[in-house]
Image (cartoon, rainbow, N blue to C red; front, side, top):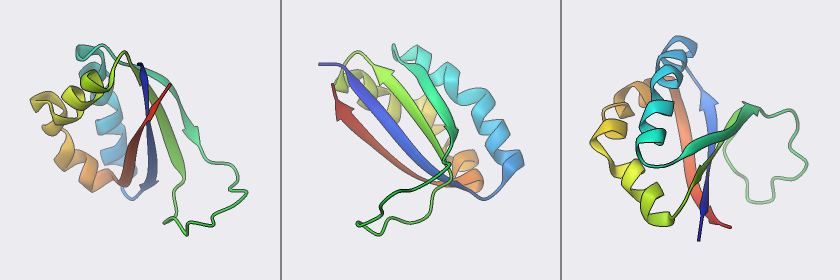
Length: 97
């Protein structure tokens, strides 16, 4: 089963975000994934779960959950975590399709 990985982000440092964004795509591709879509949140219609604010999202596609998990735990991606932590707060989750 293929998987979408959805990231909901609240940016805190635009310069760090640009640095992260320049590098993250290469790590995704190493694990058979692709960045399908990304953009700004224009409107939240409901927030009954009381989620923390987020202003940007990304949608990644991977052939399998194992590929997505391997990417998330990979040394290549983990090397970007300090930049990511400076750039944003992130919620990242998988959706089976």
